[in-house]
Image (cartoon, rainbow, N blue to C red; front, side, top):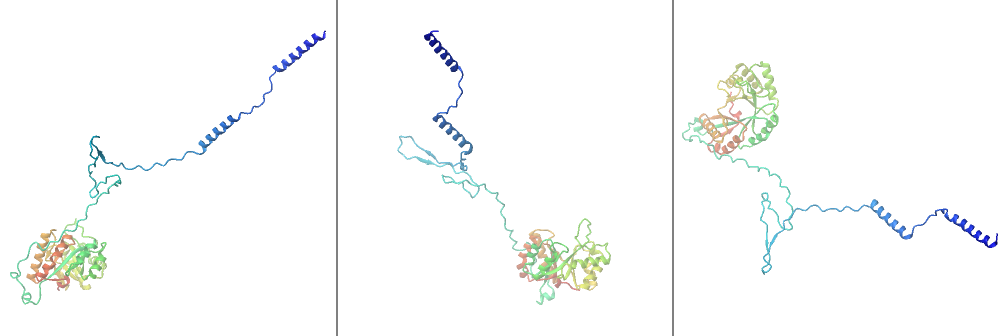
Length: 370
């Protein structure tokens, strides 16, 4: 083959070999991203991390303020030369004593508390008993009174003390001699007896006894007609044991027991042994208590007037006047009342009345005679 042809043929063959080699896929080589793209990626990741790990701060909202009523400004037309006039809102009603605040510096009014009822002072005591006794000139007087040697004596006994010591203190503070009769076995029985004795009052035992009405409960330690003499003695001894200051006894209820001769004889024998006197409350006219006491040599006296069977200033005033009248006629009288507020006020008002009428206020023991 000629050299020229061989040369063309050889070049073509080399070209074909190169073409074959170029048609084969070349191995992929990693390409580095450009710098701007890389910076953008870094910024994006930084923002994402900031959102995930650093949340925004919570904005603290201020507490809601009460609505403030701003003053309304009423202006005239623009052509007017007068200054604007401030129109204040109408005054609203507020709780009593607390006007509603207005203006820019007004503060909200707190909830108004429920107003308690006012404590009223006690009613004023009556100035004098409602009914006056007969004039002293027309009242028959005993020879001793007429001669001026003695004055009529009046003893007042207040029964039923024991459940309330406050009312007992008030009665013990009356400005004249008083006898307090204390029920046994109640909450303040012993304390009242001690307090009354310390304040200079006479203290006696208000001994419960059986009434005619079986539905009435005379209280603990009551003497009953069904008891034996031994049981009566034990009951009386237990009742007297609550205080060493008792110097006498009167009956609480007892309209049935005081008619029982045997029971009264047993009671009087106990009182005689202890040198105590007996005041018959006369809850029934057929009582034999004071009769048996006198027969057995026990100092005794019986009730003349109940002060407060009817609770009221007028009724109690009449009974006080009646007690004074009996004292003037007979030389001595004994009245029995109960620890009511109205009785206390009437006795407070009667203190100058007793003095004016010349009545000597005494203890119950001063009237007890054998």
